[in-house]
Image (cartoon, rainbow, N blue to C red; front, side, top):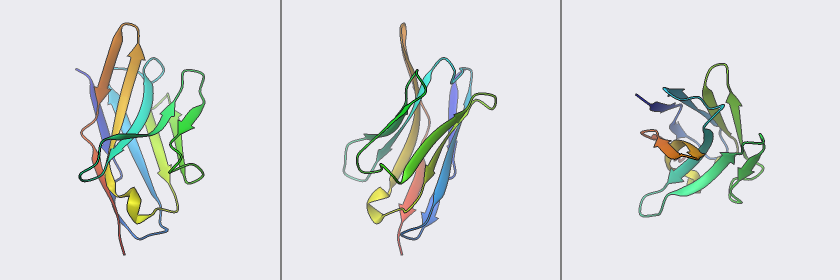
Length: 117
C-alpha cells in the first residue's frame, strides 16, 4: 500500500520559516518524481516545486528564492524548506509522487500552513 505522509505544517508569523516533510512508503522517490502543491481556500491547487528526474527543481514564480525542495533517497523523504513566509503562502500543502510510464500518481493527505501575525 502506497502512502505519502506530510508533516511540519503549522502557524508561523510573516517572515518566518517552516520545513515540510513527506515520507513515502510503498514507493521510492528514486523512481517516482516528487513534487509539492498547495491549495488556498477558494483557489485551485497549484504547483509549488517539482524535482525532475535529472535532479533539478522547478519552482513556481511566487516562491522562487524563498522555498527550497530537497530529497533524501535513503530516508525516502522529500522536504520543502520555506523561508520568508508571507500571508499569501497560507494553504494546505500536498506532496505528490508520480511517474510517466506506466502513469501513476499518489498524493499525501496535506498539511496546513498558516502565515499570520
